[in-house]
Length: 229
Image 1 (cartoon, rainbow, N blue to C red):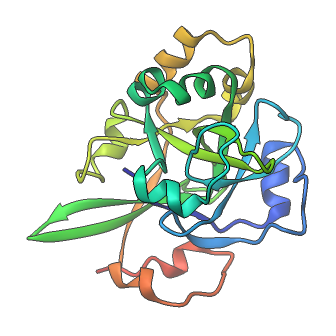
Image 2: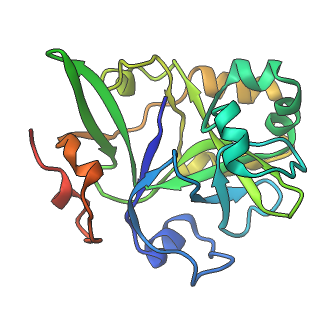
């Protein structure tokens, strides 16, 4: 499972890469470490509004849910959801059919067992450009969005840097944005994409695990914080 992301790219670069604007541009700020165990927002593009970038709380909750994020996440960790979850958990089924989204990141963190401990890797595009992960979302009773990463065991290139589980994010290519968000895309096509995602070239850098407890400031070069062990 993936519980930490990065989105260390300036807003203007994200808008240029995706060709659409942020709905609330002044809210966005680059973030080196997005920790899913804290209530936090992700930048997303939804089926409902594919012409703009919005925000969603990380952690899927049922449609029209009224209670607090912390209450739900203490009972059910839904930062990541699998295809099996989406097809078999009653309140998630509609999300896969009607509320898919793209989650915008500059990278994500994986963990590999090594020498009696774990090594942490930061995976990102060699170009350092933003990219998108497959997600689903629901709309809460107060109108806010909530979202989860869709994970799959189909991408062995990512799995080679992540053996704490066999589930890794599904990367959506730029040319597949319309396919993923379209209401005309069949569920069979979506299932196949999740189970056998196209290969995307990502760079993996080993980082210092202690970095997660440090206070970091933003730098345009995300490699500046990838300190070798």
